Image (cartoon, rainbow, N blue to C red; front, side, top):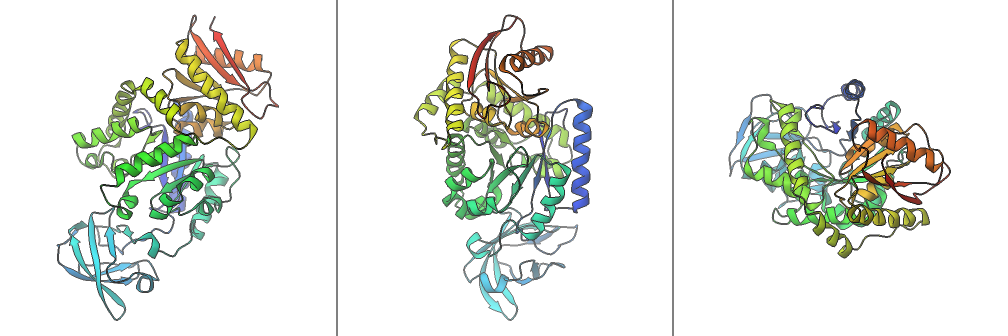
Length: 453
């Protein structure tokens, strides 16, 4: 999958044990070193994930109109009784509420109660197997995010050195701040998953508190009407661009490829449109977790994204950026970087630069540059290995190593030499370089134009 084009690995802790997740993390690290290129690692915390007791390996059919009992528990489920691992199920779920199983594959409506069970009627039928997720409307789910289990998992991965952490079922900026890790890159980049109605309502604060955003369309699609979802996707991406945050578009992007060798035409269009909307990254889930040919899926996704990037309306995007109200950073350092990245985008366009080289400590400069979607490639240099791995999530960024922060002339000379040695630029090219004056600089305060010799 790395050879096929995978830039970042998501380790989904909703499945498997902690030791399994850590083993996968260390395997990715070893393979990244073997292939000689950075591969980001993102641990996805399970959050207050509600699941049904196991239906077993063989799928069961739940027909529309069929009635069943929903009861608290986590042991086993049948077509007659479904156990759900939410202790307050009977207290918080009310008659008339709609619950969904397996990312909306099956819907049921609560129609009554009988002793220690809710009575529900299937309104949209289908097959279930294993332990499917159960979507309970977020205003009925009274569980703190992140959970105690999340924090236990996070501690283990932070100690191991994970690059990014995704927080599930975020409702407000307070949920993001409760993660409590050091700011990136000393700690992992915090990715807030937008999958509840409350998160949409509190979006601006969440984006401000998080390092990146994931649009988790499975649960979000259960929280809102299906016709609203594409517009929410565009709105969330635009808000992230305004604040310079990477955005991951996720869920069912190439779902048919769990079994099929090629995606549907609609799926191909979905991936391309996510790129056109301004997504920083597109994510695969079941396609690579349980699919029959994960490498083929990654290769297909990479081709679709590359083709969409090649046909991206860069000049039109520049006009949109002028119209888009970008949030101004409150600190002077942020304002300086913001102004210089905007200037670099114009310089690169007017001088037909081959590359924009960002020398960055935290990755902020490269992420701020990426929102302009320059036609020139973005080469992001840092001496911090975690910053390099975190930049695998940013649109267009090619993360490259730098030995140390030094006086500007020395850093620029090293960056040009590395980029030239790796074939990103060559003699005669014009490049724009964004960097600090020296190792003490807290912001990107120098923009240079270099003719590569």
